[in-house]
Length: 272
Image (cartoon, rainbow, N blue to C red):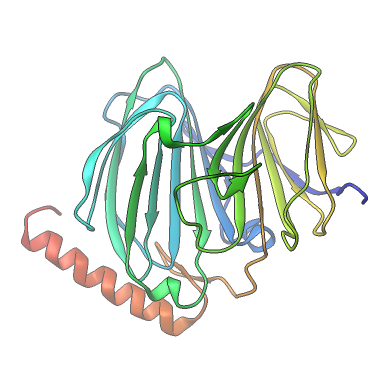
């Protein structure tokens, strides 16, 4: 089976210590259900974060290598997720959450991914799951952030068929991954080091692979770390709101209305 070629390369857009690699209005259309990716990379003051804010129609996954995160959500959960753990928030029909960063190092490396939800799930109940570092599956040099790899499944139930991996490669080491059948969407973000990918040298770039069924191969040209994602394509429109992504206008309106109601409850409680 032929390897996939590269369709797009990008270094994203920097906004302070956050670099936006994917958003719903650009590469999200090519990568859906992966519709958003932020990369935190820089000095972050302790306690920096994002106060109460809403979402609907999506799920978010937050992953930090070297910072703890204090979280709270309107499903009633509150706590501290340790560095290399996972914060999963399936917004469904609408929820609010907040989070604050507590670095363990001078600079912070972290990621937030948004996933578009399929019909039915996009209007369903909210779910918050917080996975400790020891419960994130590790297969040799690969951490399984979502989905399954070599028989090790992450405890977070994915809303649709997909895989998200954090891969560490020693200099000179090759790594080949063959996505599961039907996973036509594939991308990688080489966020540390430099690797040869489909015949091109890639460093601190996100690449989008051609859609298809072929494998992908990386050869580390120096010590390298990358995120890799693949999925069955989300075959629905991306209908966008300020904090929401839905498959149709009716679901978006329903989500926005529920967000408004939950926000009113937070205000009555003096939280907003």
